[in-house]
Image (cartoon, rainbow, N blue to C red):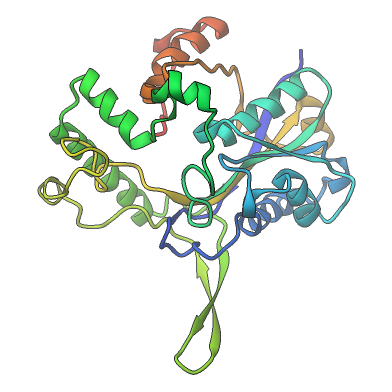
Length: 317
């Protein structure tokens, strides 16, 4: 079995939906900017030698429809020879593409794959343009279709996570993000995106351009006292608010995954190797505990122990 390596990864800055800097910028345009920058780092790789472009997207419709992966291969790589596909595993869609790329490479059926994700929650709201649940499933299992905010309330209640604990965690998260931004820790991974915006000045339609290169989410001056004043966002007696919940976002990020053969052929230096990947199903109404089931599963499958892991990064959403 061959190994799969990540040799580079870049992303856009993350816009805050639905009123952030990227609200009028298509996700495929953001993704094209990131992929072009990624591949510009490797002029020795002929784009026609890329085996696939795999993009994750939670709501592949409207501006993210038409198999965005294929569209990105055409737009970003300037060749018709590279195929593309679009993958949906909701919040894990982008990560799933890296797993797919790794699986193809370890199986020996690919050597070079561009993998990542692109999303616009400004243009396509949570749930898509029109939610049409299966009527029988919705009648028998209504909790399968709860929105994420309500699932967070159920998890908080079941595990006795107080409003105060959530607010305190949120403030720490914001403080860490702002400190990292101020130290420039994200600069090397962020690809600036040119943002074009049309507006009416009262007389005629005007156009302006700006460069977006800094994450919008972290709000300076966030305090526990300030968050305590916010009303619950999802349930009248709830604990999740607009201040302690994860934001809705616009943005894109991609990595280049290659085989050991490609490492040698193109004289590449790996930055990471995907050792293992596992997913686990839990009750949809408490989807936030997914990692509780997935982590033991991946440890068992890989033959590793929790103490072998030096750093755990977990998506707060």
